[in-house]
Picture 1 (tube, helix red, strand yellow):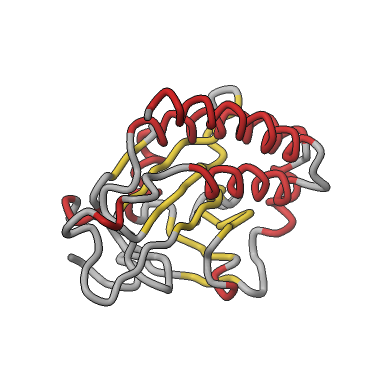
Picture 2 (cartoon, one colour):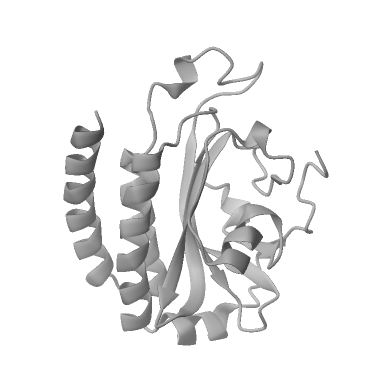
Length: 206
């Protein structure tokens, strides 16, 4: 299964990477990569595992990129797939939850089951996600942002999914710089439709 996923991942990266390079701008480039990951990554049968979904939950996926605003106070959502429309410009405090951990540690991260991590915070308006992966977007040693993907069902995301997301994040870095991402971000980092959350998220400590 891992070999099949890796082969599919290479094909996805070729297609999504081409779309990102040919995109009209930096957000469209990030959306192309997020869309490719969204369509492939994660165990699509994870929701069938006993305990993967709690009563009232359903399996679904989100993907996108968070970029550090010029004042370094927030991560701003860019190029999102599957997020509620009103959270198109989700703004998470720079030290908030696991996006904050990735920023502080400059490191990729896999949370197979978020229930096992007491510091996990819900920033998605729709529901708390059960499984998630993060990959830094770095350029010449500078942290610009991170690609993320999450699923409602626990144990959806695996090590192989993270490896493919990391490869996508490397493409994202080049595309972000090539498309003038930093200048675009400077002009758009205080959006009128910002959906700001506090550090503790929408579900509070837990």
